[in-house]
Length: 388
Ligand SMILES: Cc1ncc(COP(=O)(O)O)c(C=O)c1O
Image (cartoon, rainbow, N blue to C red; front, side, top):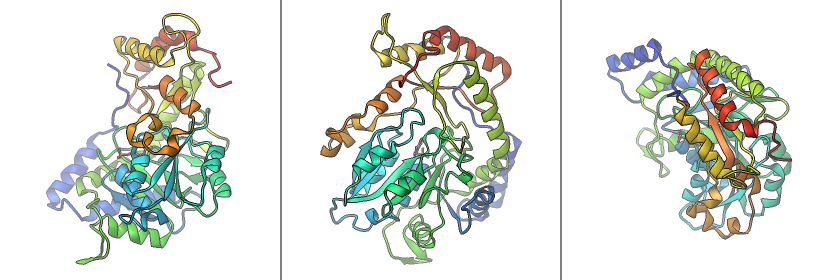
């Protein structure tokens, strides 16, 4: 089976793990600092990187929860609030969950039909005096229009969920530096992986100080606890993997970009598009199927998509769904504000979305096999406009 993704590991990761085991330091040693420094170094060539702090944490979900704790939405937690956090309707649920876990209302908004990032106009319409933060997701590595959001919501904190976007940029500004505070994930589906792992990034010293304390049980200095915080510290083993992975970042990005070009130029499907000025990392390569006009799945985009996934799998190609529509999940639907809105683009992208295998270890024969299988099974969708 050609896997959807595989970590790009070799002797470097084995040696990194052995180094930590030999050191006897499994937590709070040198590796976390080295990993944070390596990410900061990689971003230092970008515009707007001065004063950056990178804080490694246990995963991208916790990173979002800590990032949100640096916004006004975090101030009154436990008191009962009517705070609102705007979240795109299409995503792995973590950004929306972060809002709920801080006692806020996650206000869902539709996405752009081409970039699949949050629709700036929809955000503008959703703003209220209670909006405390906007979580803009660099969807699958494609940068969100954070500058556009900033001009429309000047007084609202902008969290950039760059979980998928290490290595991407918009107009020379690296993803991770676009928001007031940003997050990465290092889950195995991401561009580099530490197994589980995440990071909070900010150029704001006060936010950095808050996250630094919060990730370590709310300790501001040894033994001084000023706020309730989780243990969100990344272990030395995970961080050492990160150090090894960061040394390969440019190789990984180059390979991903070359592969994406082969797929996109080879098949006229409705691939995700990048906005002008963007450089993308191709963390996920996906397209949306049109709703078939005829045949057993006429008008049933989701049925056609699931049949395609099964057919690809039968031919040795693991493809996957793209993401989730949060307004369909009970924990989001129970907020009245999400019941009165419509999310047509989100539904089309979620129901018709297909992620194809893409990782640096894919060989030429495998790429040819994927292209052949897609031509055979999704030939009916080639050249069909999905979002007119
Ligand atoms: C957009 C987005 N945000 C947050 C997360 C959560 O990251 P993690 O799996 O590291 O908790 C993911 C994970 O897939 C994601 O895609």
